[in-house]
Image (cartoon, rainbow, N blue to C red):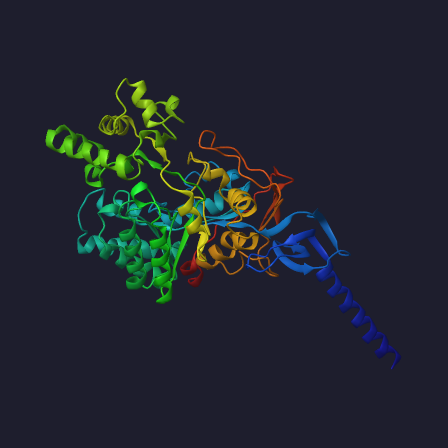
Length: 527
C-alpha cells in the first residue's frame, strides 16, 4: 500500500510539474499591454505567452518564465496587420520588406491588378527555398499576366482553345498556391476582356476556394458600371469579390461613393460575398498610360507609333488624352498630375505635368499637355500621382463594415501609401478624426483580411494562432511619408513579431527574418 501511495504521489507531482512547465515557460512573454485582439471586441489588459512560433497563453502570466520579456505597458498589442494589396515584384531584392514591416504588417498578398509571377509555382518555390523574408508573403494569380502569355496585348476575344488555355493556367496557379484571381481591367490587356471571359476564369478560381479581386474597369466616369460588373462576376461565377483600392476618381464623380457602397450593400443583402479594400489617401498612383484611350496603346510600342503617325488617328488619341486630363484621372488641372518615378529624367520626380509644360516652353493647356503625355510615353513612360479624390469619399468608404485597409504599395511604388498606410489610419483617422474606433480599425487590418484569404490561424490574438503581433503606441503612431518624400518610415510602431520571432524591436529592425511563403486553399487540399 505504501509503495502504491508513493507511486501515485510521484505520478501526480510529475504531472503537475509537466503541466506547469507547459503553461509557465515561454520563448517570449508580452506583459502589461492593452490587447485588441482583432475581432472588433473591446480591448482588455492581459499578458501573452509565445512558444514555438505560436500564441500559447493569454492571461495573467506575471509569475511565469520566458527567454525574453517585452514590457508593453502603455502600448496596444494587436495581431500583425495583413495587407491584401501589395506590389511585391521586388521581394527577392527587398526580402526584409522594411516598408511594410515598419508599418506593423506581418503578411502581404501580392499579385494584384492582374499582374503576378509566371510560372507561378516555380516562383513561389524559389522564394520559399532561396530567400528569408521578413514577413509572410502570399500571391494571387493575375489575369493580365495570363492573357498576355496566351494572346499578347491585343484587342480581341480569345478563341476557344485560348480561353481553355487561360483556364488551365488559372487552375495550375491555384494548385500551386494562389489565393485567387486578380484583374486589372483598366490596364492592358485586361481592358480588352469581355465580362464573359472574366466569369469563366473566375469560376475556376472560385471552385478551388479562391476569391476574385478587381482593379475595376473604370474608377472615374465609368465607376458605377465597373462596380456593377464586379457584382455580376460575383453572382455568375459564384466567387467572393473584393473591390480593390476602392475610390472615386475625378470631379464629375465626387460623392458617388454613396452609390457604390449602396451597390455593395445590396449585393451582400442578396447573399453575394462582396467586400472592399482601400488606402487612406486622396491621390492615386499608376503609370502615365492610364491617360490614354486603351485602344490607342494596344499591342506594342511600334503599333502605337504607327497609329500616331496617322494624322486622323493622332487627333483622336490626343483628344482622348485631353478628355481624361479634364474629366478623369487628370482632375481637370495638369498641376494635379505629379511625377513619381521617371527613369529617363529623375529631375522631374516630384514635379507636375504643369511644371513640365513650363519647362518645355509651352502653354500648359490640356491639349498641349496631351502632346507632352505622348512624349513621355515614347521616352519610356513614368509613374504618376493623381490628386483627384476627396476626403469625403475616402471617409465614407472607410466607414463601411466590410472595407479593409490595404496599401496598394510596395518598395517601388513612389507614393506615401507604400510607407504610411496603416499608421496613417491609426493616427489620422482613429486618433485625430475619430472616423473609426481603434477596435474597428484593427479588425479591418487583421481578422477581416485573414477571413477573406482563408487564413485559419492568423488575424486574431488567440491561443494556438501564429504569433504574428504588432505593438504600437496609440498616442504617437503616425505616418511621415509625403508625396514629395514618399519613403519616410512611420513612428509609433514599437515591436513587430513574425511567427514568434522579433523582427522589429523598440522601433529598430533586427536581423530576424522569419516570414513564410503562404499557399492558398487548393494547394492545401492537395497535400
